[in-house]
Image (tube, rainbow over all chains, first blue to last red; front, side):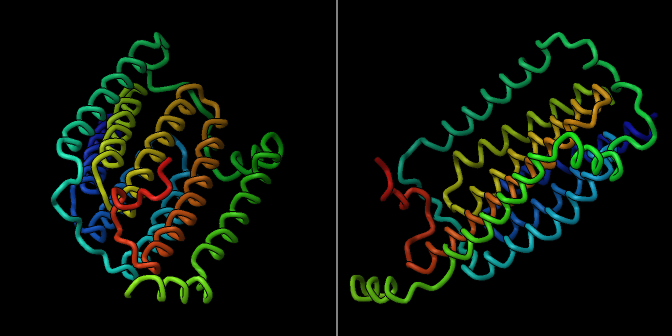
Length: 181
Length: 99
């Protein structure tokens, strides 16, 4: 039990540090690397919550595939640092204030629900809880339609990305005439 | 750990992501901060799934992951398109579609 608590605090601090790094670091490349660390610690938290399949999917799909996509795009567009000046003065403190209000509201909402099970370690679960066998049988029996809809959504997104990122000859000639490159 | 700890942690991560979306100007970093918010939602879903001892919440989290992957693919496609047209990568400058 004490071991679980220690692992929770280490993973929670790591996840918060990763999130802070994403928001604070000015170089987009470092932000992406910070998000990879954040995702790793989040996968540890998923493991503590007995979501083994999701922890593995988080590491393989997110930290493995999606982040590689980000790194490629940062390398492609050059990863320029952000300009420091602001177009609208005073917008940054306002944004932070809004986020703090959101945090307070979420905490009040969580603590004020009155759910008695919130103060426990959760219900007793069987040994295979959250494993690939249980997730697979749920996906193919109870949630078959969302599963198929998700696969169509991925297909549509892949085609959409191809359409967005391909070279359009006619359009590029038009812009080169219109503005000095 | 009690489930409340996980929920408060997820609220912290969500608020950090919201602050990033509101304050950062690089569209790529705005997408990264959206990822933070989606992941905070995932953490809350899985914590509730653990609380009830019911794996349905993990299925929801899986669907959120799929939606996040789609959002990343389309968003990065748009960013590459912005770069190709030599428009400055600044969300304040990308105001042509503003109503």
